[in-house]
Length: 263
Length: 96
Image (tube, chains in turn yellow, brown):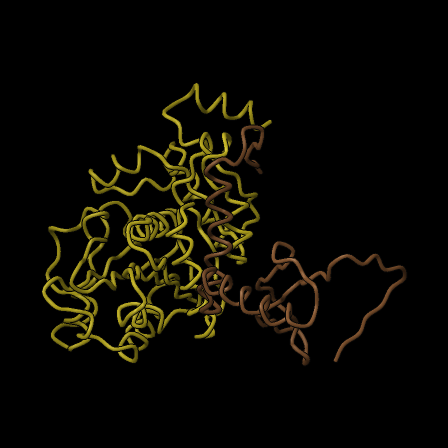
């Protein structure tokens, strides 16, 4: 049975696209058939994070308008043959698609994929309504900042009003060193305020920048965030993995000291 | 997990947490802290016509209250207005 998951946040720049790319890659790594859909019409980015920007011929709007078949628009990932991207259109805007068309689009993909991941645009307008229309489940990404959490709270309210099945939280860019000295809200604080179940926490990690520069998601690699993303994917598949916040540190030493401080 | 240290007063993480809590209630009820201040002033001026109360003791805030029907919660305004200068023994609870 396939599942449609929307990755959303309200506020822009908190890591929705990075999270979508990495969860998609992680699930594909674990053997799932995954379709990643960029629903940010007019401001597409998921193609760049996936490193597939040069292979785009058709896009989501072409599929919806019937200019091409779904199979022509789906781009196969460079590394995983079971991972596909449906890119968004760059020269159109959010009004090019409506929620009913998005429901049909996700329905059509259910035959061929185990997971359909929708990368939602920022904001609460039509782009958001389109993205959540066909979703069974939502992952709300936030960072431990007042503005991002405020927007996440608003988004959670809207998702609940739409009767979204499961709504779970991912706290991104956590800096355990700052949390320890009291200058950043902890993952517990964020959970306490937003009052939804936590799916995972991602450390603020330099490797993310490197991975985005290269266009290769790092889920599953030997980096703090790569492991955190893979853990999230395993939890999605039903594995019971305790949630820890790894040090986002630069290497071996900081990881060891982090471990000792936690122990 | 990690709690902020309070040895040197409020750290910025704690400040953020407090600001957020107030902000979210204000967002959800459409009732800003400024607005609560105004309600407090008005309540004080009305009640002080009848009873001796101290402006500094009056507390007005937002909380959530269970609905009559069951598990749903609704925002509710509460006001705590201690009456001046009287020590009272025993419990009492009078509502109109």
